[in-house]
Image 1 (tube, rainbow over the protein chains, first blue to last red):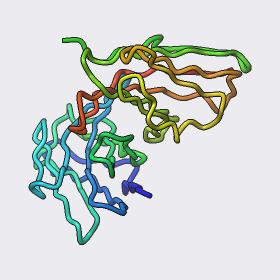
Image 2: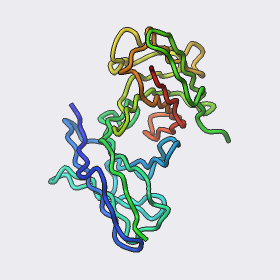
Image 3: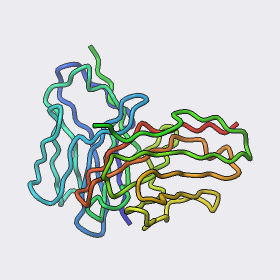
Image 4: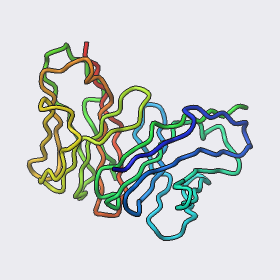
Amino acid sequence: AQSVTQLGSHVSVSEGALVLLRCNYSSSVPPYLFWYVQYPNQGLQLLLKYTSAATLVKGINGFEAEFKKSETSFHLTKPSAHMSDAAEYFCAVSEGGGADGLTFGKGTHLIIQP
Amino acid sequence: GAGVSQSPRYKVAKRGQDVALRCDPISGHVSLFWYQQALGQGPEFLTYFQNEAQLDKSGLPSDRFFAERPEGSVSTLKIQRTQQEDSAVYLCASSMDRSGEQYFGPGTRLTVT
C-alpha cells in the first residue's frame, strides 16, 4: 500500500527566505509523485510531478522538488518565498502513473512572515 | 477554456437527508475522480471513472455512497441518509489520459447538521 507523510502541519518562513516542505512516501513499486497547492476556497493546483525521468523536477512559481529514492523523499523547495506563496501544500503518490486515485499527505500550511 | 466545475458549492443537509453533488469535468477528459477532504486533512480517494465505466470504487466509505457517470461526461456523487461524519469538502478531478495530471474543481462543502 502507498502512503505519504508530510512533516510539519505548519511551516513559517520570512519573505525572501528559503522554503522547504518535507514529504516522505511509501510505495511498493516505483512511484509517481506530485505536489499540489490549495488556496482558500479553491481546488488543488498541480505544482510539479515526478514521473521517473529527471530526479530534480522544476514546477510553476519557482518551486522545485528532488526525488531521492534512498531516502524515499520528495521535498519541495523554493529559494525565495513570496507573500503570495502562503497556502496549503499537499504531497501525493500514485502507483498507477497518476491514472488511478492519488494518495495525499495531510498537508502543510505555509505561512509567510513579512 | 473552462475548468472543472462543481455544484452546488455549499450544501447544508439535515441528518438523514439524501444529497447529490454534481461534477462537470473538462470537455474531452476521459478520467474522472472523486475525493473527500475532511477539515484539516488531505483529500482521500473515493472512486474513479474512465468514460462511463466505474473502474475503482474502493474508497467509498459505505454503501450509502454512490457515484455515476452515465454518458461519460458529467458525474454525480450521491450520499443517502447523510450522517454528521459525512461533513467534508467533496472534490472532483478530471484528466485527459494516463498522463497523471489531474485537474481539480473547487469542491462542494457539505455540512450535515
